[in-house]
Length: 372
Image (cartoon, rainbow, N blue to C red; front, side, top):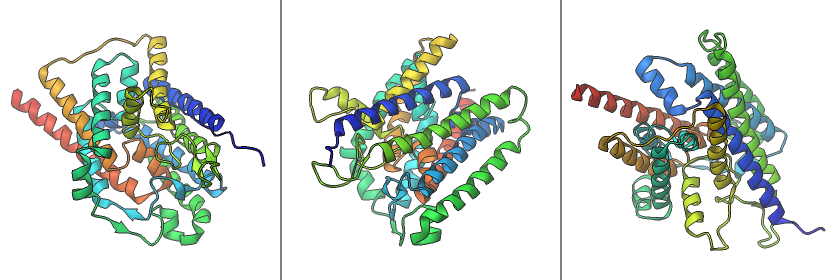
């Protein structure tokens, strides 16, 4: 039996993650794909156009991931999102914290990276603070309230928490395609029912945003869950997913990888610290956004406008770091990657994010009216 080249597999996974991240960053920069913007458009103007971009990406991600799972290319049970333990309070509270924070910080994790690539120094500060807050929530002082107040409220299910497993039990693989197709078709029907979404040249931008972003999530599962999968690690004699921080199959998420990126930079000479799938994807988004911003002439340096602006971004970044780790993901980590697996935890997190974003938008409107 030939020796397994773990280093070679890891290198391939990392470079593919970087490439997918770059494609994500270029697309998000060009099409203004942004979950926070989509929600605030609804709250403030009643405009659902950008939310339909996100829902189209969700439909594509669900359909593609369901196909991968149905044909046995990936095993959804080996991801971080599909465990039998449902931390319902952590998902709701963490999602609400993240949603509130992303509005204060002018964007969620992926938007922060996209803005860094286009010269926004405020987003660079947000990135650093989110990373610090996330690391504190993973292993530091903020892990105490997470574990003692939130994570100990959970439900243990009889099956994995994805809908196909709940509906079919042991026959989840067969049910995966049926449920995935049904959910994707319902989302597509809602998305394209809007004449504004389908209008003129706008439809091309909207479709590009949704299809490309959704396809990148599917490709990320393939890279991590198939190309990076080793049935027997020669060092541990156990199965492994090479170059992931969680040791499991991963797709895109932009909170914990901020912490791991800072950790790598601060401990660069520690040979145990390596570039992982999440770190490479994070750096790729910045690189892709920068390339697109420079190429389209929209790159410009931007800083804080006031002391209140600084305070809002710092507070928002702390809430995003804490909430994203607590809820096991962000608008991309849970809103696309987790939802593509049709998990209950992802749906609860999304509900929390929407509620938190609405609360933050109402707070900002109150502040504006009070100052006026």
